[in-house]
Length: 452
Image (cartoon, rainbow, N blue to C red; front, side, top):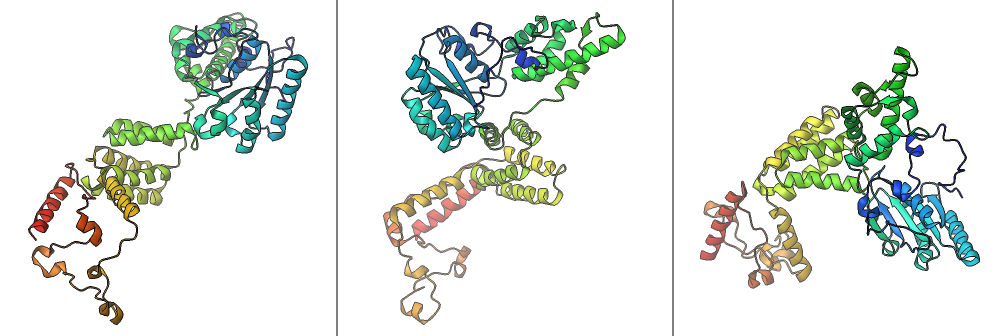
């Protein structure tokens, strides 16, 4: 069983990435996440002997989840066993629990069990862990980039406190960068870097809240600057980092997006809500975020087709035509040109008048069906084809609308029990867009029906 944090204090740091070299050695060195480590917070002032509840650390990459888990073990001076859900199984969990039970029984020592990417554990693996968290054999620290509600079983989740870590603030990243720039044994100070405030801002912006990415960009940028300075002026000259070197090191931002995870649901929700809120700029931003992160365009197009009925409906019947045409056009041309009909449909739907009466009409009809079950079809509405049907009175009394003026005749088409009860209207048009006209038509039909 591999301990992710096991290391020899005397081991050389040569070859380790800057992010690893700069990991804080105590909670006092930890930068950011003050809502967790600040005074009076759950991870503040962890002293030996303090009882820590089982917790799930939920946050984006590079926000300090793994570092905090390690620091908790150091601060509490307790046994720390670390597993990665990516390459551990039920056997590893059982071995960790057995080790913890042995330390507890023999030496009275508590054990922290850190599980990285806990959302990747199967239900069986999480169930194997559950009783040992419940009885206190281990204190669990789980780390996940995904919403724990999606990836952690409810029974285990209920026994843990979920704490949310946020992306690092720009001022936190600036502080981390300056620490690395001025640190000789662990940082890059030995390379004599010269980084202006403007360049530092570029590095921080490119990191986008991710401390690990910050250190990677900084390390590469300084290395590029050092090589350029060596070639031009010699090894003792300042290594002045340029904007071009930062751009080369950053190679564009990594868009945080998992097509099956929490960020997927968050971004698609923002997209739909922007459409519903009639904001084409926001809708286009979220659409582009998803496309640039690798989302399947057909998924987005299907969502637009649903939206065209669910949120626009008869307020603009053309919306469904535009959405389905965009789907067909994408199938015809594919990428990259397929983003054009996708954009056209997105902007059209964002600016279309809105109505959810299609959704509410189906919900109302479904409620009636569930409440009243299989009410008989009125005889007059049944098909009168065949001698048997005719002998049973099928079709008797049916009034053919096209035989009447205006192609309409007052009639009840609901089951007799519902018609007699005077059920509330199922479809109630809104006053938005084309539905205003439909509402006027419906009002006229209702009035004519009442006159008989």
